[in-house]
Image (cartoon, rainbow, N blue to C red; front, side, top):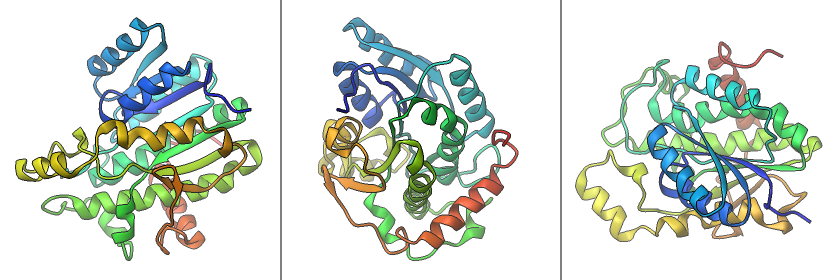
Length: 282
């Protein structure tokens, strides 16, 4: 019977928002946590909160937009020799503009490529620790992407609000999960994506103030947004199943584009090419 108690869980973007709420809930259920975040002081503060309540947690500094940082963080985790039963790729940015240190559109680099690279490095540990789970936080906004303009992923000027770029990154999350599900199916690691809903979280902090107020008034709470991630990490009934896409603890339908094996293979191939200089040796 699957239980999160004593499982080693790594959560990205755990210093605030959905990631923090997920971490606090899993700590209460006895998980042994590694909280990965860009801000070491903020991540350490969450670690201290968990430990003050008798929980177990450690911090791991990583900037998912910077592939050098991702590689170093993964190597540090592996170097500690800790198991990895559950990896929750939660971190994300939205409404941002600019390029990553390696020249990729910032939302695509952070939300997809950084997580792909981190998971590739940690893949052997996930397999060694199996049975386990890989959970990827996506979004229903992927339905709004009708085709992928591959050239715009590289060194492009972001749109005014960054919304198309965010949607593309969330489609990439689901396509990547599709590939990971096939890749890990024979190794005892279940892969699922979750849709948290419209959440009034810090992910939208770079949007204009009126839009931030709109999200705050219409969005669900951070705890509500984290609920399906927590469920996907803890639900015994999901053991042995893989490839699910869930929202509000229910199975959801992806777009036709997100459900394409051909497109998933293309996303994987291109991601591997873009990240070739930072990937682990075969």
